[in-house]
Structures are given as structure tokens and as C-alpha cells.
Amino acid sequence: MPVDGPNDDIIREFVRGNAGDCAALIPLAGDASMRRYYRAYAPGGPVMVCYDETISLSADGEHQFLVVHSLLERYGVPVPRVLALDRARGLLLLEDLGDTLVEESFPSLPADEAEALYGAILDILARLQSIPPDGSPVPFGRSFDMEKLMFEFDFFIEHAVKNYFGFSAPASFFRELRAEFLGVAGALQRPELFVLNHRDFHSRNIMLRDGRPCIIDFQDARMGLPQYDLASLLRDSYLVLDAPLFERLMDRYYRSAREAGIHSMDRAEFDRLFDLSAFQRNVKAVGTFAYQSRVLGRRRYEPNIASTLSYLGGYASRRSELSRVFELLLECAGGRA
Image 1 (cartoon, rainbow, N blue to C red):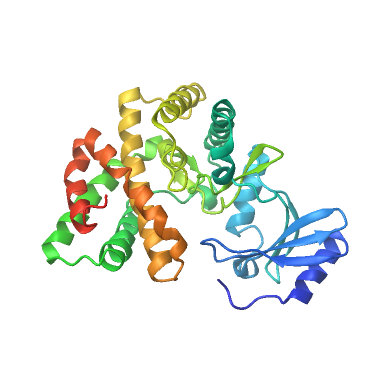
Image 2 (cartoon, rainbow, N blue to C red):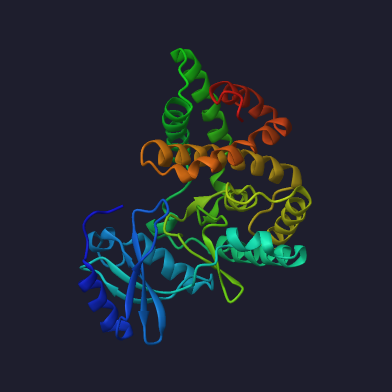
């Protein structure tokens, strides 16, 4: 978390100037973000204040959050409204969506309502992935290319395999593991199939406002396979769906996204690229959780490591190209995958 930034008096002044008197200012617990959030109580109701140092360091029209927010809002993707901006101080005033995450609400919903909620979320995903590239570098100049995918695999090796699992082996082991990761990354290099992706489209980044889903934490959007965001949602580290619901949602997305022109793959190719995408995404997530736990001391992420590793065996059982890399992961994770 940033240690500098505006003090409470400056933030209250920002709120007063844009939403009226600030009766209370409550700092909110952060997640894995480098931004700082507050809930401010104004006459018209609560609003959110975000301090993000990068806003003050970015030229007008170049800040990732603001650029992607404008794009998503323009195409009808539900995101919190930006109410005010103080660029010099790195402050944003945002619509307050409340505190209800899909992760928290889903388990208590009746089965039909839970499925309807995920259907609505898939409709939002299709709307996002249907946004046509306009040539702008953010977000369309960024993609899940080989460099990005291998950075995430290498991050996993460093922070999960070597640090969290404490695994040591001859250099030849790591050369083989990395070669297997290169094969997966290469199979996912299909730029002719790429569409816009949120990049972290899961149950902790979807909030419910009056029962309707709204998307947050979208500033790292980039181009990639349509299966990437789908895997983030349906093979979620935080919320594991039962098999029948997973299959129905897969079927729904496959058909609706094909009808919308998001993809034209046959089902066999679609499912194969889904499993490879989900494998890469889950491995990346384990690396992130290990880093949060061991380097940043945020131990609350450790339970998510086990739930994420539990997916990997299923992909390997269906995809021969993952069988060897799964064997290597079993070895370095001490059989926990």
C-alpha cells in the first residue's frame, strides 16, 4: 500500500467540494491493490474515494483506469460512475456500490437465482468482449502475448515453487518446467482469436448493487482469448462451482458468444483452449497468492492456493499436452496439486 498521499483533511475537502459535507470518512481494508479506498458519508448518501498515485503521474487521457472506465461505460458495461477527479492529488470520487460481492452472496442464493445471476454476468462478459478495437494503446495495445504469459509463469516459479513450496531441484528440472510452460504459452498465442478481456473477471471483482452485477478492478484490461475471462469466472479461485452448473454455464457462453460473433470455434477447439487458458490462469493465481503470503505477509490468501491447485488435475486428465507439466507441478508442490 502507498505510504504517502493526501491526509484526511484534504480528502474531506475533496468530498465537500463535489458531494457536500463529509460527515464521516472511513478507510476501507485493501485487497491486493496498491490503491487506497475510503467511504465518505455525504448528504446524498455514501460515496467512494480512491487515492491512486498513478493518476497524478499520468497525462490527461492516459491513465489506465480512466481510459478503460470510459470505454466500458460507453459500451454499456456496468461500472461505478466517476463523480469527480482531482488529478493533481490522485483522487477519484466514485459511486458507492455497497459491500456485496458475488463471492459472498452466491452461496446463500437459491439454485435458480444463482444460475440466473451467473447468466447475467455472462451477458456482461459478452458485451465487454464484443467491444471492437479502436487502435488505442490502452487497452487494445496490450495482450496476453508470450512475454506476458511467460512473465506470469516465471513469477509462479519464483514465488510459489521456490519460495512458498520451498522446492529445490537441479537446474535441469527448472529448464524442463519452463519448457513445458513455454509450450502452453505458445498454444495460447492465437492473436487472430483475441478479444478484449477484463483480465481479473472473478467473483471478488463483481459487486451487486440492488441485485444487479457491476464490474470493478478493470484497469488492466487487455486482448486475449475469449476463454481467458471465462476461465477466470468459471474456474474461480474464490468460488468453486459445482460440475452441473459449470457445464450449463459453459454451454450458455459457448452458444451466445458464437452467435454474437465473439468466436467461431467448434466446441472441441473451444474446450481445449478453455482448459489451457484455465491452467495458465490458475498457475498465475497461485504465484500471486504465494507472493501475497510470503513477501507481503498477507496470509489470508493461503487457503486460495489449495482451491486453485485442485483444478489442475482435471485439465491434465483431458489434455495430453498438460500431462507432463502436471507431473512436474505435483513434484514441486509436494503432491498438493
